Length: 163
Image 1: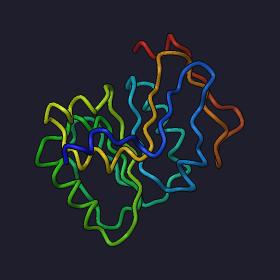
Image 2: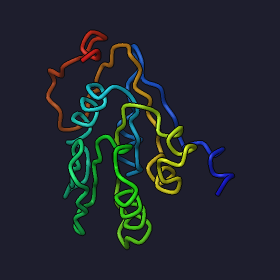
Image 3: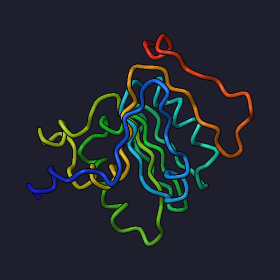
Image 4: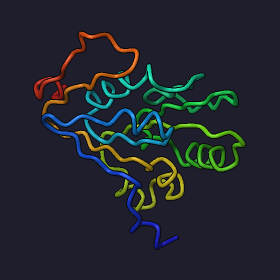
């Protein structure tokens, strides 16, 4: 397992200024995505992605206990780095032994890799979640036009991310 830390995600993006995520990559490939950045910015991106995700959707918010629904097709895990070791192991095992494919969208305010290298976050789970890594910078994030979205979409300025 020591060699795993050198692996890169299949795709990695840094969002800043006028850059936006490629929703088609996230939704068409049905891949797991990890958003790293400010809570406000990652929450906005998850909210914008929500209409494109396949249901049923299970959602773990903040410090809520992790509850895995057998029928869910998409799992959203906010602040994934705050999962305790038992929850990390449960989620990893659940993902590894599911018969059905599912998408996991996770967020964290800091980079998770340092937690992995310090042994505070499960390495196998990290690589399951980190198929597409999206770093959300401190600049303005302009939401893309997404399927099922209204034509008047909000934008977020750098001042909004300070919260």
